[in-house]
Image (spheres, rainbow, N blue to C red):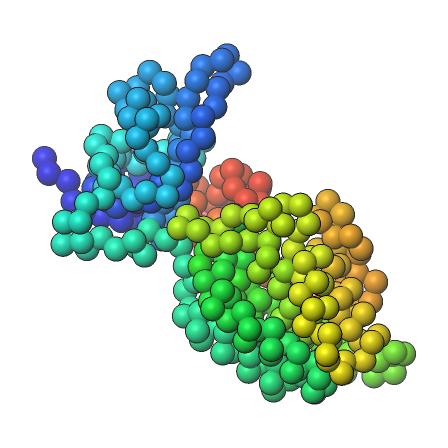
Length: 330
């Protein structure tokens, strides 16, 4: 019987169909018993399926010799839900051809991306700086950093895999964090009007905007997502974020202590050494930015698990980014 062209993300357990997919991973491994195999992954814009290709199956040689990460394929396969997560039983596979555009193939259909236009995200972020940051030199510096890197920011993922790991993900994450920072800054400034020194709402907001700016140098966008640069692997984005800020502030009129406090927000926003932070948050502003950042990342990860998990029952599998089951309901 002929199969129907469908999206990989629309396949249900036991369903077979033809679909277009990007090969997003391929790794040669061996089992504990020394049995060789490849772990591969294929994806479209909304789902990635990772599974083993054992060395004794019919497609093993083709997988080993011809399948390439970053290439697009037309695949006929059945989706199977297993105790190890969803897997594909591939019947046929070939590289995408020019004629496939007649069936609707477009590379963007296989690439994860922000649900919101990155141009809109960028403009919204810039508007917050212009409307909410009262310190003029600080607002000008922040806007300048954004505008100078606009082209890269529009397509930059926020991470390689854990959260917002898709084109436009950086701006989606940073805008969300900044909105939370605006709320928290205004809330706690009103709650503690006699705090000495006073809570600097401008620093909390700008800290939200710039906390991940070092990812401009830590990551580079590729057809299959983001990858670490050598600088990203050896130094990380927090110290490089401080470098970007210092370089941009050379001729700025920002108060020296305010600049120091902003540098601290950037290098402390992940809080723990095992997360790459050289210092924990040591100011109220840094603590607020940390929790705004951490909550946005964790919530996005949980939403992704709920959207992508296809197991039956009230709980999701625990084989996910959070490494825990999530309760969906009866």
